[in-house]
Amino acid sequence: MHGEELRYITEAYESNWMSTVGENINEVERMTCEKVGCKYAVALSAGTAALHLSVKLAGVKPGDKVFCSDMTFGATVNPVVYEGGEPVFIDTERDTWNMDPVALEKAFELYPEVKVVVLVHLYGTPAKVDQIRAICDKHGAVLIEDAAESLGATYKGHQTGTFGSYRAISFNGNKIITGSSGGMLLTDDVHAANKARKWSTQSRENAPWYQHEELGYNYRMSNVIAGVVRGQYPHLEEHIAQKKAIYMRYKEGFKDLPVTMNPYDEANSEPNFWLSCLLINQEAMCRQVRGEQEALYISEPGKSCPTEILEKLAQYNAEGRPIWKPMHMQPIYRMHAFVTREGNGRASTNAYIAGGGVDVGMDIFERGLCLPSDNKMTEEEQNRVIEIVKSCFC
Ligand SMILES: *Cc1c(COP(=O)(O)O)cnc(C)c1O
Image (tube, helix red, strand yellow):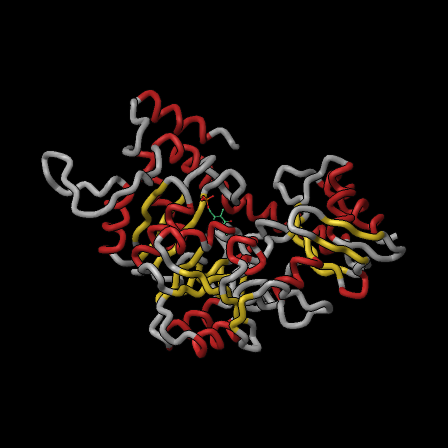
């Protein structure tokens, strides 16, 4: 928080515009269009709400299969199920840890009837979105972009959140800028924007009484929340610079360890560096076994594993996290199809193939972890984190 947030919340309070109408909402919609470069922004209660309305706008009907990023937060894919759709998970590529265009092309061979694709830019790193979009165009599919983690990141000079027909951003408490909660649906289609605005405010028709022709939702952003977002926006670039400095210090600090940082396309993209992650080289992995709820490992000299590093960090009160566990390995989605670049559309029960193999997402989950990445973290604190990680490989 920087101070301006309080000013805009106070304005909402003093003018009594404490609900889902007001100057802060209008302003954050305007600021978002200006920053991202989209025509319309609809302020909502959450990024998940934006994804839900995107799925509705894309026309997903009960029983429709939808291609989805696999290694992501559940909120990317759950909205497909809210509409009765059936997510089909597309494996991850190693260059950006996002949806693999090769696997997506294979998926269209297996399921040519699919008309909607949901793509995430994970950890603030842009996906290979021009390739993904070209494949969608070729097959007449609508692209939904989940830019919840990537606000401010660019791909070939364009902001993430400008590539899909419908795009979601988030102002949840953990994102690059926050409203404490909140999200937005972005589009260049005026009819879609009007629909989303109407659906999000209980689908009232233009009548003197409450007249309803369509199903409605209570998804509009509050003017108080919008005040927080409004105060944060001027600090977006500063947050990105802080996050990038954190990423670069880790990269430098780990250069002699058998690890790599979460990768990005340095020629074509500029991430927002929302989270710094590391990946342990295969040969430097000690033995680690993960069940559904707990993990075990055997410590070995010169080797480590995510479980050991996360436990060690926790001992020092520093919080790391595992990588997002792939959706195809989640019990709730276990029987859904999962497509790898080899093109097998299997339901996966034991998809991890040791040593890399074909299941890229599961391999990154096994060997990767999210490092403490808060922008308030001091250089001294970060240096301690680096020393703790180094000690795990002794
Ligand atoms: C945070 C997040 C969401 C959901 O946003 P909320 O505002 O928390 O509903 C969706 N997708 C991804 C990848 C996220 O990180």
